[in-house]
Length: 180
Image (cartoon, rainbow, N blue to C red):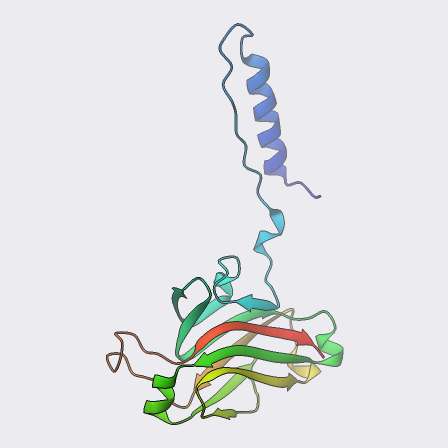
């Protein structure tokens, strides 16, 4: 495991503290929290309720509800780590979500469109309540960098104040880029 310079300084400071403490004094316990150096890396799969990947939800997401999902607004964005082979073989963008019955009653149908790194992806229409999946193939040329930005747009959504103080779109559980 690679250690940072700051980690070694911390170790030296702890060792010095032990050496300078007289042996006859009452011993105090010392707690050192180690930092997971891999924690800052982006993921190719974002579970919207996971605090580790919440930073990847860049726009248009509300707070976590029931420890498992988030409402979106009418336009929302996410940053994802590209799969290692995506620039050669392409990938598949998948979003798992639900449309509550109330939303279908009021809006009748919703079209979901996505733009990945500036490339428009196919639009899908949903007109039934329940759990759904938006899944589209993404060509290799869309993966020009290790991190991709995906901007989602809904053709219709519930305006703020219509049924809630918030603008409401979809109930999203996961968004992922998988190898093709």
